[in-house]
Length: 224
Ligand code: C5P
Image (cartoon, rainbow, N blue to C red; front, side, top):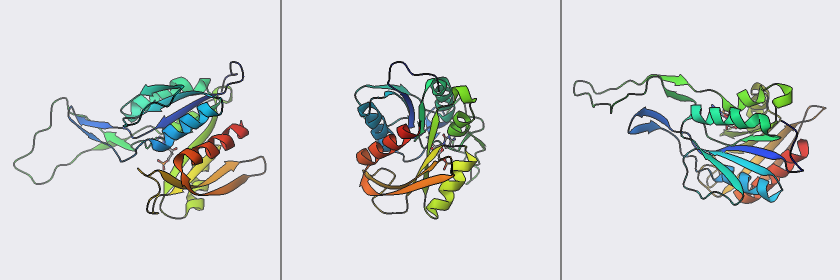
Protein backbone atom coordinates (compact mmCIF):
# COMPACT_ATOMS: atom_id res chain seq x y z
CA UNK A 1 0.00 0.00 0.00
CA UNK A 2 0.91 3.62 -0.55
CA UNK A 3 1.99 5.90 2.30
CA UNK A 4 -1.08 7.08 4.21
CA UNK A 5 -2.33 10.65 4.43
CA UNK A 6 -2.11 11.75 8.06
CA UNK A 7 -2.34 8.78 10.41
CA UNK A 8 -5.52 7.20 9.09
CA UNK A 9 -4.83 3.93 7.29
CA UNK A 10 -6.94 3.33 4.19
CA UNK A 11 -8.86 0.07 4.48
CA UNK A 12 -10.60 -1.48 1.47
CA UNK A 13 -13.23 -4.14 2.14
CA UNK A 14 -15.29 -6.32 -0.21
CA UNK A 15 -18.66 -7.48 1.11
CA UNK A 16 -21.85 -9.29 0.20
CA UNK A 17 -22.62 -11.64 -2.67
CA UNK A 18 -22.01 -11.09 -6.36
CA UNK A 19 -24.67 -11.49 -9.04
CA UNK A 20 -23.78 -13.16 -12.31
CA UNK A 21 -26.23 -12.39 -15.10
CA UNK A 22 -27.68 -15.28 -17.11
CA UNK A 23 -29.91 -13.00 -19.19
CA UNK A 24 -31.45 -9.52 -18.64
CA UNK A 25 -33.77 -10.79 -15.88
CA UNK A 26 -31.95 -13.74 -14.23
CA UNK A 27 -28.75 -14.28 -12.29
CA UNK A 28 -26.67 -16.71 -10.25
CA UNK A 29 -25.88 -15.63 -6.70
CA UNK A 30 -25.64 -16.86 -3.09
CA UNK A 31 -27.09 -16.19 0.37
CA UNK A 32 -24.40 -13.83 1.67
CA UNK A 33 -26.09 -11.07 3.72
CA UNK A 34 -23.08 -8.73 3.79
CA UNK A 35 -23.40 -8.40 7.60
CA UNK A 36 -19.82 -9.43 8.37
CA UNK A 37 -18.29 -7.10 5.75
CA UNK A 38 -20.44 -4.18 6.85
CA UNK A 39 -19.52 -4.84 10.51
CA UNK A 40 -15.83 -4.81 9.47
CA UNK A 41 -16.32 -1.47 7.72
CA UNK A 42 -17.95 0.05 10.81
CA UNK A 43 -15.23 -1.38 13.07
CA UNK A 44 -12.46 0.01 10.84
CA UNK A 45 -14.02 3.51 10.95
CA UNK A 46 -14.32 3.22 14.74
CA UNK A 47 -10.59 2.34 14.87
CA UNK A 48 -9.67 5.47 12.92
CA UNK A 49 -9.39 4.14 9.36
CA UNK A 50 -10.56 5.66 6.09
CA UNK A 51 -12.82 2.97 4.64
CA UNK A 52 -13.84 2.06 1.10
CA UNK A 53 -16.49 -0.65 1.01
CA UNK A 54 -16.94 -2.45 -2.30
CA UNK A 55 -20.33 -4.03 -1.95
CA UNK A 56 -22.41 -6.54 -3.84
CA UNK A 57 -26.21 -6.19 -3.65
CA UNK A 58 -27.30 -6.32 0.01
CA UNK A 59 -30.14 -4.89 2.11
CA UNK A 60 -27.99 -3.00 4.61
CA UNK A 61 -27.49 0.70 5.33
CA UNK A 62 -24.04 2.16 4.67
CA UNK A 63 -22.20 2.52 8.01
CA UNK A 64 -21.43 6.12 9.01
CA UNK A 65 -18.21 7.47 7.61
CA UNK A 66 -17.83 4.71 5.00
CA UNK A 67 -17.42 5.33 1.27
CA UNK A 68 -19.49 2.64 -0.45
CA UNK A 69 -19.04 1.50 -4.03
CA UNK A 70 -21.88 -0.69 -5.31
CA UNK A 71 -21.15 -3.47 -7.76
CA UNK A 72 -23.08 -6.49 -9.02
CA UNK A 73 -20.79 -8.98 -10.73
CA UNK A 74 -17.45 -10.48 -9.70
CA UNK A 75 -15.84 -8.80 -12.70
CA UNK A 76 -17.07 -5.39 -11.52
CA UNK A 77 -15.93 -6.14 -7.95
CA UNK A 78 -12.53 -7.21 -9.32
CA UNK A 79 -12.20 -3.98 -11.31
CA UNK A 80 -13.00 -1.80 -8.26
CA UNK A 81 -10.74 -3.86 -5.98
CA UNK A 82 -7.79 -3.49 -8.37
CA UNK A 83 -8.51 0.26 -8.60
CA UNK A 84 -8.53 0.86 -4.83
CA UNK A 85 -6.25 -1.79 -3.31
CA UNK A 86 -2.93 -0.24 -4.46
CA UNK A 87 -3.83 2.88 -2.40
CA UNK A 88 -4.70 0.86 0.68
CA UNK A 89 -2.78 -0.25 3.75
CA UNK A 90 -5.21 -3.09 4.41
CA UNK A 91 -7.49 -5.11 2.12
CA UNK A 92 -10.13 -7.39 3.60
CA UNK A 93 -11.90 -9.74 1.20
CA UNK A 94 -15.15 -10.61 2.91
CA UNK A 95 -17.36 -10.90 -0.18
CA UNK A 96 -18.86 -14.23 -1.16
CA UNK A 97 -17.70 -13.97 -4.76
CA UNK A 98 -19.33 -16.35 -7.24
CA UNK A 99 -16.68 -18.78 -8.42
CA UNK A 100 -18.25 -18.95 -11.89
CA UNK A 101 -20.32 -16.79 -14.25
CA UNK A 102 -22.22 -17.58 -17.42
CA UNK A 103 -19.85 -18.08 -20.34
CA UNK A 104 -22.29 -16.19 -22.57
CA UNK A 105 -25.00 -14.13 -20.82
CA UNK A 106 -27.99 -13.95 -23.18
CA UNK A 107 -28.85 -10.56 -24.63
CA UNK A 108 -32.57 -11.38 -24.52
CA UNK A 109 -34.61 -13.32 -21.97
CA UNK A 110 -33.93 -17.04 -22.29
CA UNK A 111 -36.97 -18.97 -23.50
CA UNK A 112 -38.24 -22.15 -21.89
CA UNK A 113 -37.49 -25.04 -24.23
CA UNK A 114 -40.66 -27.03 -24.96
CA UNK A 115 -38.78 -29.97 -26.48
CA UNK A 116 -36.46 -30.81 -23.56
CA UNK A 117 -36.67 -31.33 -19.79
CA UNK A 118 -33.08 -30.29 -19.25
CA UNK A 119 -31.22 -27.05 -19.87
CA UNK A 120 -27.46 -26.80 -19.88
CA UNK A 121 -25.59 -23.67 -18.83
CA UNK A 122 -21.89 -23.30 -19.51
CA UNK A 123 -20.04 -21.42 -16.77
CA UNK A 124 -16.55 -19.99 -16.76
CA UNK A 125 -14.33 -19.15 -13.79
CA UNK A 126 -14.42 -15.69 -12.29
CA UNK A 127 -11.18 -13.92 -11.36
CA UNK A 128 -9.98 -14.60 -7.80
CA UNK A 129 -10.12 -11.03 -6.51
CA UNK A 130 -8.20 -11.47 -3.28
CA UNK A 131 -5.47 -13.58 -4.91
CA UNK A 132 -4.96 -10.83 -7.51
CA UNK A 133 -4.71 -8.18 -4.76
CA UNK A 134 -2.23 -10.35 -2.86
CA UNK A 135 -0.15 -10.68 -6.05
CA UNK A 136 0.28 -6.90 -6.49
CA UNK A 137 3.92 -5.73 -6.57
CA UNK A 138 5.32 -5.04 -3.08
CA UNK A 139 5.12 -1.24 -3.28
CA UNK A 140 1.40 -1.43 -4.17
CA UNK A 141 0.47 -4.38 -2.02
CA UNK A 142 -1.68 -3.85 1.09
CA UNK A 143 -1.80 -6.29 3.98
CA UNK A 144 -4.34 -8.87 2.76
CA UNK A 145 -6.95 -10.59 4.93
CA UNK A 146 -9.26 -13.27 3.55
CA UNK A 147 -12.18 -15.30 4.80
CA UNK A 148 -12.80 -19.01 4.56
CA UNK A 149 -16.18 -20.60 5.17
CA UNK A 150 -15.61 -24.26 5.90
CA UNK A 151 -17.70 -27.18 7.10
CA UNK A 152 -14.79 -29.37 8.27
CA UNK A 153 -11.05 -29.35 9.05
CA UNK A 154 -11.04 -25.60 9.71
CA UNK A 155 -7.36 -25.31 10.56
CA UNK A 156 -6.15 -27.45 7.67
CA UNK A 157 -8.15 -25.54 5.03
CA UNK A 158 -7.29 -22.17 6.61
CA UNK A 159 -3.54 -22.90 6.29
CA UNK A 160 -4.06 -24.15 2.75
CA UNK A 161 -6.04 -21.07 1.65
CA UNK A 162 -3.61 -18.67 3.33
CA UNK A 163 -0.76 -20.18 1.34
CA UNK A 164 -2.57 -20.80 -1.97
CA UNK A 165 -3.94 -17.24 -2.21
CA UNK A 166 -0.81 -15.59 -0.77
CA UNK A 167 -2.69 -13.94 2.12
CA UNK A 168 -1.28 -12.42 5.32
CA UNK A 169 -4.20 -13.42 7.52
CA UNK A 170 -7.30 -15.56 7.24
CA UNK A 171 -10.52 -15.70 9.19
CA UNK A 172 -11.94 -19.20 9.01
CA UNK A 173 -15.44 -19.88 10.23
CA UNK A 174 -17.30 -23.14 10.62
CA UNK A 175 -20.52 -22.68 8.65
CA UNK A 176 -21.83 -26.12 9.60
CA UNK A 177 -22.72 -24.87 13.11
CA UNK A 178 -26.39 -23.88 13.41
CA UNK A 179 -26.98 -20.16 14.09
CA UNK A 180 -23.52 -19.13 12.93
CA UNK A 181 -22.20 -17.81 9.64
CA UNK A 182 -24.34 -17.01 6.57
CA UNK A 183 -27.22 -14.63 7.34
CA UNK A 184 -26.93 -14.91 11.13
CA UNK A 185 -25.81 -12.24 13.56
CA UNK A 186 -23.20 -14.39 15.29
CA UNK A 187 -19.93 -15.91 14.16
CA UNK A 188 -17.15 -18.01 15.63
CA UNK A 189 -13.79 -18.02 13.89
CA UNK A 190 -10.23 -19.19 13.78
CA UNK A 191 -7.86 -16.26 13.12
CA UNK A 192 -4.60 -17.33 11.52
CA UNK A 193 -1.82 -14.98 10.44
CA UNK A 194 1.72 -15.05 9.16
CA UNK A 195 4.62 -14.10 11.42
CA UNK A 196 8.36 -13.99 10.77
CA UNK A 197 8.56 -17.43 12.41
CA UNK A 198 5.65 -19.06 10.57
CA UNK A 199 2.04 -18.66 11.64
CA UNK A 200 0.13 -17.80 14.78
CA UNK A 201 -3.51 -18.46 15.46
CA UNK A 202 -6.32 -17.70 17.89
CA UNK A 203 -9.77 -19.21 18.23
CA UNK A 204 -12.60 -16.72 18.72
CA UNK A 205 -15.68 -18.19 20.41
CA UNK A 206 -19.21 -17.46 19.09
CA UNK A 207 -19.94 -13.74 19.43
CA UNK A 208 -21.91 -11.04 17.61
CA UNK A 209 -20.48 -10.23 14.16
CA UNK A 210 -20.07 -6.60 15.26
CA UNK A 211 -17.78 -7.71 18.11
CA UNK A 212 -15.85 -10.25 16.03
CA UNK A 213 -15.34 -7.53 13.41
CA UNK A 214 -13.60 -5.33 16.00
CA UNK A 215 -11.27 -8.18 16.94
CA UNK A 216 -10.42 -8.93 13.29
CA UNK A 217 -9.74 -5.28 12.41
CA UNK A 218 -7.60 -4.78 15.54
CA UNK A 219 -5.53 -7.88 14.74
CA UNK A 220 -5.15 -6.92 11.05
CA UNK A 221 -4.15 -3.29 11.78
CA UNK A 222 -1.54 -4.55 14.26
CA UNK A 223 0.11 -6.57 11.46
CA UNK A 224 0.62 -3.59 9.11
O1 C5P B 1 -11.77 -19.85 -2.32
P1 C5P B 1 -12.79 -19.30 -1.39
O2 C5P B 1 -13.98 -18.69 -2.11
O3 C5P B 1 -13.18 -20.20 -0.28
O4 C5P B 1 -12.02 -18.09 -0.69
C1 C5P B 1 -12.67 -17.18 0.13
C2 C5P B 1 -11.88 -15.91 0.18
O5 C5P B 1 -11.46 -15.51 -1.13
C3 C5P B 1 -12.69 -14.75 0.70
O6 C5P B 1 -11.79 -13.84 1.31
C4 C5P B 1 -13.30 -14.20 -0.58
O7 C5P B 1 -13.70 -12.85 -0.45
C5 C5P B 1 -12.15 -14.34 -1.54
N1 C5P B 1 -12.51 -14.55 -2.96
C6 C5P B 1 -12.25 -13.56 -3.90
N2 C5P B 1 -12.55 -13.78 -5.22
C7 C5P B 1 -13.07 -14.96 -5.63
C8 C5P B 1 -13.33 -15.97 -4.69
C9 C5P B 1 -13.05 -15.74 -3.36
O8 C5P B 1 -11.78 -12.48 -3.53
N3 C5P B 1 -13.34 -15.13 -6.92
